[in-house]
Image 1 (cartoon, one colour):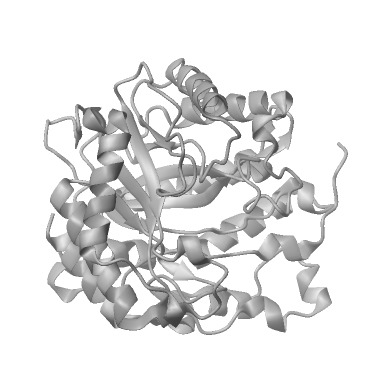
Image 2 (cartoon, rainbow, N blue to C red):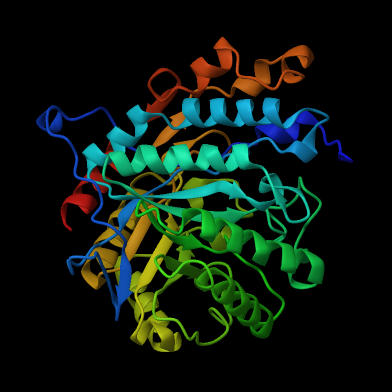
Length: 406
């Protein structure tokens, strides 16, 4: 098998993901309920198999850059061992219990499904990598938390495919398109009978060249999944961020079990500004107007539920960002919009999310350490939430209140 070698530093690109604090004593001895079988869409509602309406509210966990067989001349066994250790030390059972204690009932596994990592050769997949995802879903399901599986690294945009040479090629590369669709069929068949999976989030932040390209791709994916799985919700993301989307999901779909998704960041239109404190986050009246405009312009929302898969403000925005976050959650809860905050942990970059890493372990690694695809004691310590992360108590309080108002 031919192997494409890419510098190991690409293996360690981890980002933001949201979470919770210490396990609350009031639930210490009460076993959490498991999800009630499969979720499904009924009109504009999400319900469980007993007919109870479910409001999905929780966290993103990720992005995490797992190692790929194509990244380095190494065995799949060693790659899989690295990825398994990465998962267990980045998001542990303690973290899942933490989320549940805050009141979350869903986690969006951002980049835990990375096409570039999943596919070892065209139409061949790393089963050890899928086992790592299985373990995450089982761990969450045991605590009563659903998982939304999100696809990244598939050439769906430029900004998230810089290390795998795919760029934004999904929309023009017919071979890549077929392989991504085939991968979803394979995954849907694998997870078809797992009730802990809330749904399949087909592409993270797609940037197609036309509405026809987006719509036709989604149609093919939905068709491929439904050949093997009629149980799970399919999540379709609008073209990039709300406010920058010219054509939503491109059109209508002949499937009732579909959840529509947008992302929303208050500073997104001004990402070139380095000083986060200078970014003016919209006030509630403007947010409300924007939401009303979205519902008027996106006709599918008249009969389908909406999911805000990512939203958050940077810490440096201070009270302005906190107010925006609180307003966002209040409006989403009032409209029955499902949401996952971005994110549980932030490993590098702007301070955004609930937990922020105090230091980044890769900076202190020697070349010899970087050459080893396993987590040593130092890396394990630094990936541990309790030992290496600080929490924003104001954000924690806003999130807890938002979960409680379900």
